[in-house]
Amino acid sequence: IDKENKPDLPLASGEFSPTLGTAIVAISPITSFAMGIMFKSPPLLYSILTVFLLATAYSLHLPFLRWKKSAVLTSVCIISVRALVIPLGFFLHMQKYVLGRPAIITKPVMFAVAFMAIISTVIAVIKDIPDVDGDEAFGLQSLTIRLGKEKVFWLGVSTLLMAYGTAVIVGASSTLMSNKIITVLGHCILASILWTRARTVVISEPASTLSFYLFVWKLLYAEYLLDPICTLKRCISNW
Picture 1 (cartoon, rainbow, N blue to C red):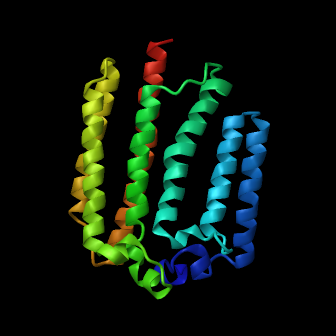
Picture 2 (tube, rainbow, N blue to C red):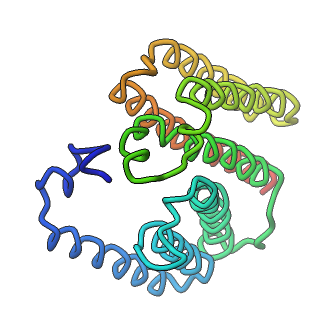
């Protein structure tokens, strides 16, 4: 499928041999599990294990697996990893096993999980826009194939803009002035960048929609940076 949809990827283009690809795939979980065991942190180790199992279910070509063939199961994988496992697992690891504080799920963490769930859902939905031709050839039934590129694209953009608007309202209600400024200003900036970028996308061109899809991943990582800053400031103020 990648040879059709993303021929520039290392394996699809032949830059990496199958042997090298297998070696990388084998070494990555081994080193990850080693780190989880070394840190003696159950939340970190369970997070790594969960990501490994979901990634295996997503990719492995066996009965009842290969979840990437299903739009629903693809969404489950992306949302589970990006919105639940990483934020909650890493927060609990830092809170209890690094800072030595009680493992309590705070309101900022719940907000982060909800917001990440929205971005992850959008990523899961728009990821197939550049891949329509290859997906149709291999019989995959994505939401993009059912609804069309343009509807799915603007559905994703509108959902993200509404999420940023909600984040601004939540931030404005914060009792901590620094959090209020960072949350409101940060999400206003990200929403403006998103809208400006979306207007330049040529939906009929796979290269343009792929670039936008990768851009949305950058928005997710920006949120990974923004949310911990606010959470840290609240923790310091309550110390």
